[in-house]
Image (cartoon, rainbow, N blue to C red):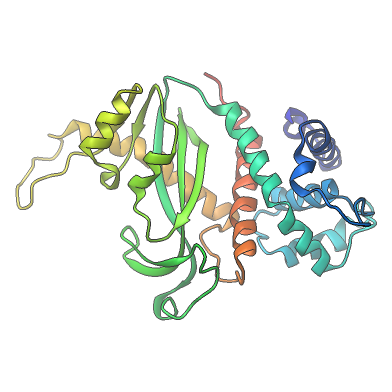
Length: 303
């Protein structure tokens, strides 16, 4: 995968991406996630080409989040590399089938950056399917999407939440090492119950403040740091609470990461989504694209 980020021209990067995906598909068992039991078991345009073309276009044009836009870009500019590109409807359905492979790819990238005894930050952001006056009418992807309120943006929306734990880097954007999605109405603190946290310092906002969870995490060597909640109506001199200031400085990193992620992939805007699988493709495709862009920008993080 390192050659994808060191190649000078886009043709070499495309070849490198295809060879790496082909290796992962057939030597690490990724092909079993999308195995077919039909006469069309070996299509002319195989799954490696589908994922390679999808990721390559998203890396170079991350603002193209809809599959129709991606398919049109391939058909206009990359037909010499993908001469057997199927029709749009077929390409869309096959892209949805590759969602488990995208998650496997994300897990592989995340495993390479997990390191003990480092500073981590945790937060969540909303992914809006509808907002404002239409949020009470939408039923898209209602298996997971719910009506909720975003306190940071002071707005109601219908959608899901993206939860993330990232490794802090000096003068760089943090690298995600834990990514999860949930219903929009789920409290942020629930993330701490499903993530494996050991031997780290974790910076969070007041939504993650809990003495019970802090004591449980401390048994695994995890130090949860949150701003101190001030008493209502009580005045504090500026600069007195250095703990809250330090936590806020660390948390600013993940706020910058969410802003960068939304700027590059527009992940928080899911207004064009019409199905559950389409929502999953939008989220996991955007996250995989952002991870590859981060590695291309900074390289692999060092201990």
